[in-house]
Length: 168
Image (cartoon, rainbow, N blue to C red):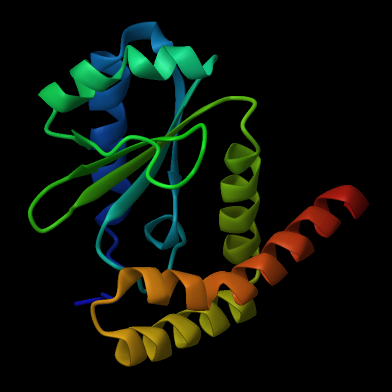
């Protein structure tokens, strides 16, 4: 079941703890870990899963992170539908997920622009929450349909965020 929780002020500290574990476990291979997704947007309701994006210099460096991340309890799911991504989940029910990319992967910039745009535009954050609540009610536990139905909104925000970056 897709469940959205009200914003939890503990989410940033849960991210910080997980970030520290990841950086320690992966040595110098991970150059940064970003908090992404709705749990990274103050005030936003979200599925209570800490979304993180570890970044490595080269795609090949991600392979060397698989075993250390598994020791931390992350299950590797391979690319999971996105070429160039290492995807991991942790917890039952899921509490964390990782989208590990090389620094030059276009998804890195896209995730950060999306997050930052919603942080800076509360009206769009509220619209996104309304959309997610409606879709969660409509699609129940069909995560793929839920995600697909969010795509037009997310594409619009991606466009606005890129345009703002180019003109700002």
